[in-house]
Amino acid sequence: MASLTIRKLDDALKAYLRLRSAKNGRSVEEEVRVILRELADAGTEPTEALGAGSLAVTAPAPRAASAAGGPKVTLIIGGGIAAYKALDLIRRLKERHIQVRCVLTKAAQQFVTPLAASALSHERVYTDLFDAESEFDAGHIRLARDCDLIVVAPATADLMAKMAQGHADDLATATLLAANRPILLAPAMNPLMWNNPATGRNVLQLRRDGVHTVGPNAGEMAEAGEAGVGRMAEPTEIAAAADRMLRPPQPRPLAGKRVLITAGPTHEAIDPVRYIANRSSGKQGFAIAAAARAAGAEVVLVTGPVELDDPQGIAVMRVESARDMLHRVEAALPVDVAIFAAAVADWRVASEGSQKLKKTAAGMPPLQLVENPDILATISKLKEKRPPLVIGFAAETEHLIENAKAKFARKGCDWIVANDVSPATGVMGGDRNTVHLLSREGKDVTVDSWPVMTKEEVATALVSRIARQVGTGS
Ligand code: C5P
Image 1 (cartoon, rainbow, N blue to C red):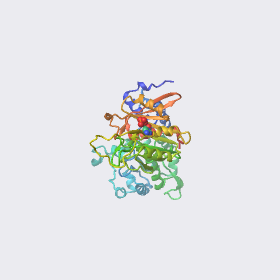
Image 2: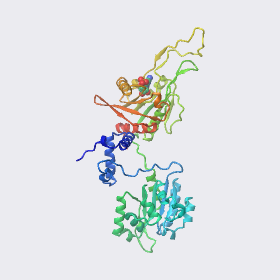
Image 3: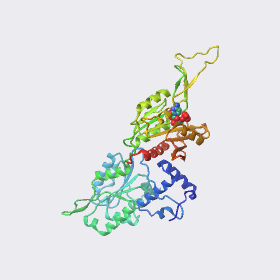
Image 4: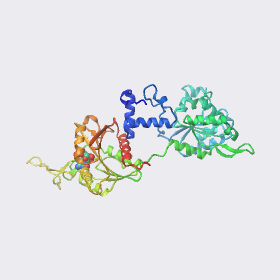
């Protein structure tokens, strides 16, 4: 069997794979395996995706649901008696805060009017492929792309046959052929038409093409005295199916796990008005806390003074000094994972002035410094209650990996996240970070270098790695 050498792929593809693998917390090789598995599961021939000798991921990227105003659906209403239920479907989708833009086929207009669809959707309704107003900028492409999902309800036997064959002779079929968004069909037809082998072949083909279906249900037909499978699914069912596709339940691999995170700087008082501090913003630690929460963990965040709001659903403990931070951390044990992202001051003044220090003729007051407790090292070396996974950070301004390796050996933690914080990188206080994850394989230290990412992306990637180590897989 042929082997694939990642090194030989073109640069853009390598960069894409590196980013995707880092975000998912996998090695590049693992990521390629996952992509191939996904393609196989979707029924895509790996050769189609691989092209001649190179790896090209051709599956359309699912669009993140539009943020403002909720996700968008293009609803194509086909021509069947069930079309009247499509009006209720518009309402059901809107109840779920989904924006709806309707396309009516010519046949659909025999059952419902564009005016009714427009009144319910609060949007202009589209009916004609050759409408000068909407087609001057290829409106069918916009209808196909400027949405998060296309729903066809009712999907008639004829419409599905045209889709299966790739016809594009009206606005609905042209939109469907131009689509690079997921498609959900709600078939509706007479039971004999549904059971016809031609319809069966078309439905099979469409499912192979990645199209989703909801229904049809069994029940009475509009035709007097006829019953069987062919009734369109109820609007509430279709809306629920659309919602599941638009907002799939998030995996919660850290459900049932307790994660402790330290963040921000510490302030070490010199006197009642002055203190020793550093430039840490706390953004990376807060992002990790939010990502761990999103993964289902119970999160305890102990932070030094920062200008950040409490992330939702997280118990935040705000402290000043390294010693306060250590007390809070100890009180939070036991935990399953402890991540020490705080930039703890290494030193504090030996005796804090009870009054503001004054300038005197004798010159500067001597500031004697003593070492702060090392929270990471203390927790890593605990005999009892040591968290099963302890992660430290190494913020360095020179010899990054060398210094991080030395710190790794010294602190006794399980992983170290090393990052270059020299002023030119803009990491301190900035929104992006370039990190290297140091872990151990037997006696060897492995270094995984991640590409530059936002602090949120670093957090998500780190949490995925953590989930693989300690997660429940749920
Ligand atoms: O020794 P250094 O400060 O570079 O070590 C960095 C790592 O150790 C970070 O994970 C930081 O949160 C942790 N640390 C700590 N307590 C200290 C100093 C550092 O937990 N007093």
